[in-house]
Image (cartoon, rainbow, N blue to C red):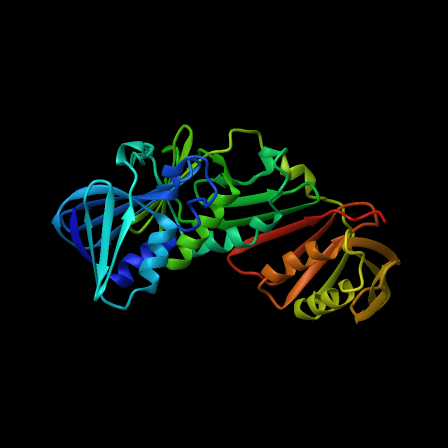
Length: 373
C-alpha cells in the first residue's frame, strides 16, 4: 500500500471512529481500523462487534492494499501533524506514516483477523429526514436505562410507519416519546401499511447522532434480520438489534390527568437547578406544591439544610404536593425547545406528563413518576 491523503480529510474520518473502538478490549483487533486503499480513495471500517462504522476518504493511491491500524493512536498522531499531505505506506507488519519532516512506524495487526461485517442489501430501505431523527434522539436517549440487567431497556424503540416515525425510551422511572411526520413511502419492510419496529442500542443512537451532526443528509434506513443499517452520505452505521420485547409504552401514558399548569421553561429550569442544590444527594428529590396562583419548589437535606423558591402560575385547582427527581425534570427541560412547557398531573401518586407548548413538526411526551420520600 502506498497513498497520499490530506490531513483534514483523514482526521475528520478518524475522529468518527473514536466512539466505536474500545480502549479496553479483550480482542486486540477491535482497537484497529481496517483501511483499504483502492483507486480514487480509501475505505475505513471499525467495529466493537455490536456497532460498526464504514466511511470513505479521498486519497491519491499509487499502490492499493489493505491494512489494520490502531484507531486511537493513529488519530492522535494525525491530529498532532502539521496541516500537510500525509503519506501512508505498509510493509506487511507495520505502517509508515509521514508528513512534512515527521515520520513514524505504527505496528499493524493481520487484516485476516478483522471480523466480517454485514452490508445493507439496498432492498426495502426507507428514507428518513436526518435533522428530525437527530432531534428525536436528543429528546429520548437520556431516558435509556444504564441498568445492564434489564437489557430490553438498554436502547430506544424505533417505530417506523408509512408516514410517521417514533422513538421511545424508558428506564422504569420516566419515559420519553417523540413522534414526527415523514414523507409517505413504502415502509422499511417494503410494503405499504407495514409498521417496522426495532430496539436501537444506546451506543448506536449516540453514534448515529454524531453522524447526523456532521451532515443534514437524508438517512437511508434498512432493517435486516439481526442488523440495522443507517447510510448517511458516504458513511454506513451498522448495528445489532436488541432481540427483546419492548414494554407496552402506550399503557404508561396517563389518560385521566385533570390538572394542568403552564410554566416558562427557562424560569422553571433555573428554579429547579437552584433548589436542587440543597436536595438529598442520593435521591435528588424536590417537592412541587401546586396551589392557587403559585407553585412552590422546595428541597431539604439532612446534611446541608433546605431551599425553596416560588413561581407565579395560572392555576386555580386543588392544592397538590408532588415529589420528583430534579435531574429527571432538568433532562426534559434541557431538550424542550419552546418557551413554554406544560405539566399535566392528577395527584401525588400517579404519573405526571410534561410537554412543550406550541411545538411544531413533532409531538413530544415525557412521563415522569412521582417519588415517595
